[in-house]
Length: 167
Image (cartoon, rainbow, N blue to C red; front, side, top):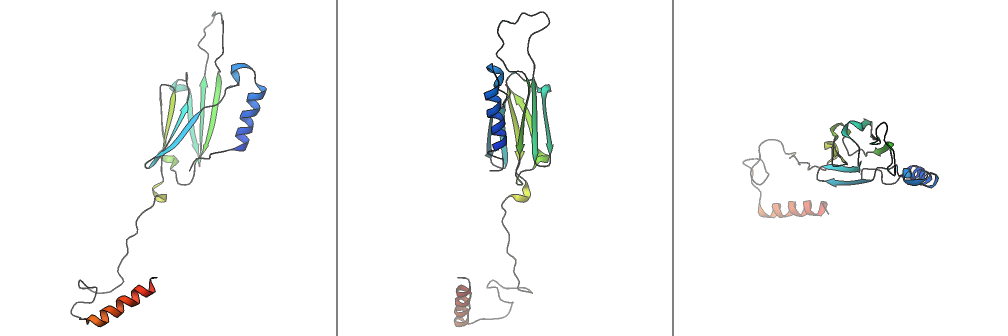
């Protein structure tokens, strides 16, 4: 997996904030789901009530930083009866592995879910290496230079030598 699965310091901060905060304002996280689909990683972050203009995403080296600001809906003169929604700046940092290409990162927000698409770096994809022939000059169908003939017995001993050496 290319994303950092567990950061003990972030988990400690999250637990400390939950323990020390009171009421619904303790929820400051961005719940995340990350998966690989083909040649890209998809990251889904829940940002309910956050406008597209209030989301800030930056990349520095292999770290993607996401910040989102949610403001209250109340206006001047409103009398607040109940307010359980968390407001303020929510932030998250994703540490990308070397197999991902942060320069190709794209983001979109739809129905309160921020989707990040991070392509796999083409240089780290598995690839097939073609094997070239080391025989110089033109060769016939049997791999021997044109015009030369080989007896059946010498052909068998050559095959045995090749087979024995490759085991």
